[in-house]
Length: 276
Ligand code: KIV
Image 1 (cartoon, helix red, strand yellow):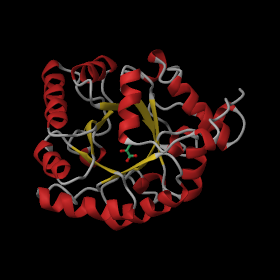
Image 2 (cartoon, rainbow, N blue to C red):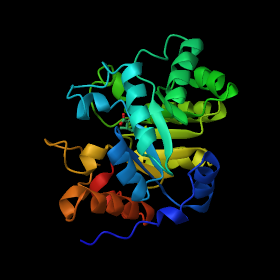
Image 3 (spheres, rainbow, N blue to C red):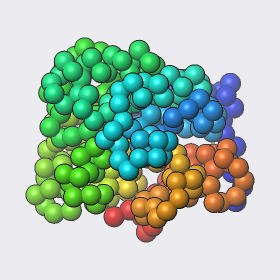
Image 4 (cartoon, protein in one colour):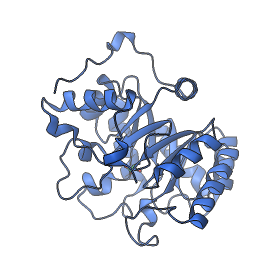
């Protein structure tokens, strides 16, 4: 399959929060990918990816571990510096690793400053409990993305990598938590492994919140995938929400362009194949 042309670099403006909110308001889907180094960050940026996430998934796809839990703040900061050197236009966000923000809001601020000084424009933290921390950070100039649904740092407590929010009580709790995080100032929300209908409700009830889905269907503001998964590099059985753009012909840059085009034209995720 031919890869569509990426926008010429000279025509692209740096992606800002204002631009991301305008995309949401206009119904243009946000294309996000994880990135961990300068070369792939440059290739994804050239392909038109809007947001690059230095995810703590690096503990698995880069370091070869079995979870995100052992990843440290210094390790994320190192990868943020690498990605920041390769990025030209994309918005850059980074995960606060496990154990670096949960104790109290001051700890979250100290950790966020480390990532901001490494080049992150936004930090991401997991959990529906975190509204007061989000408020504390946003009041101090940190731009925050929250993460609900399957939150990998607490996957063990959630009983493994399984779809969240399936029963009514869990769905209502997720809706309440999303509203509280948005009210506290979260600009973006990653929703992982939740039924498409629930994700659609979260977006509809929080129209100013940029909801980015991963295994959450297409009725949200945008999509994210782990780079190694969408390139078909990770190996082993993949969750059903992953599409292997790498197996569709051409090279890495073609696969990246195909991903951006499929998010933008809403052909990915396919409700029949990639949603719950
Ligand atoms: O760490 C990560 O890559 C993530 C994505 C799965 C959203 O949080």
